[in-house]
Image (tube, rainbow, N blue to C red):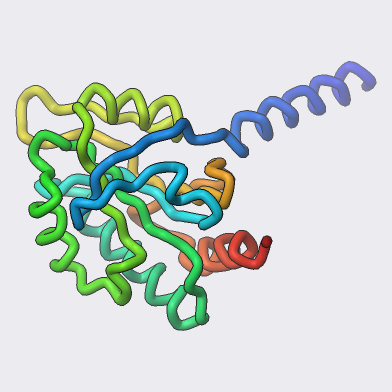
Length: 187
């Protein structure tokens, strides 16, 4: 019985350490307004992060609509202190101008909260996604598409990933609003 309890405890600790509070490495990339956005510039503000690209034919449009729905819910609840960050997984194609045009397709309630980022190589974003978000990014050699995860990541004021959610289907909008609200209230 004692062995079972110790094993259960060790498994629980390993699972919790794998899930939480991994710090994002410093970055500085160009957004859709041609402004530099860095981990340092986001410091002090909680943010939602995801990976997407403008020529995506499958998961990205629904994910962007889901982020818009989350932002509508945040606005309805008077929440203002947050950012939404989308890292392009196709940076050679996704110029700031192309990303600006892409974002206008979604009629987001407050564009000032959004930063669609580019300004790195395909290899850099694949490594960045893996190292910081445990997310997979790979250019499909047989098409113009990029294979990537569909999660939304909640990042706290200090730049630590504190939760992740399905960003494609069954998106827990209410849970995201509540979790982000807790981070906003923490001063």
